[in-house]
Image 1 (cartoon, rainbow, N blue to C red):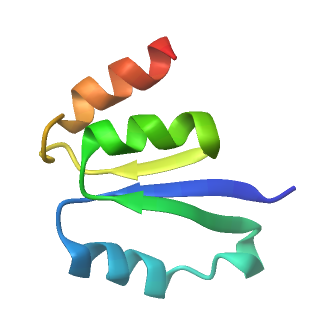
Image 2: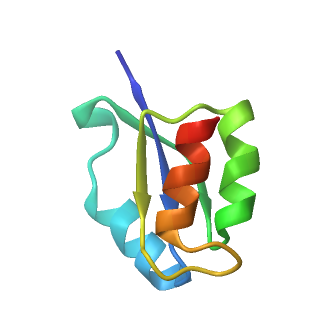
Image 3: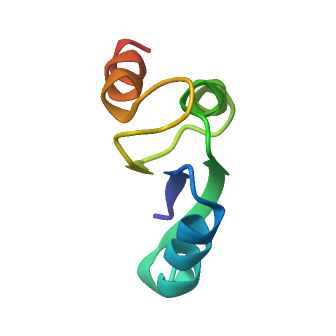
Length: 74
């Protein structure tokens, strides 16, 4: 089973570091989305439901804690 992963981080370089360091395919993961905006990732949830979300706490327009609460309600 391939697990869908979404990365949510303000910093483009941080997202690239995470993407480059992970061996997605070898570990049965697929990077299906990334964003620097908490509200944007909520819209991704209905199109590409992730199994794993990597988020930072302080992020643009919606912090990580509020994002997690909103995602759980969906």
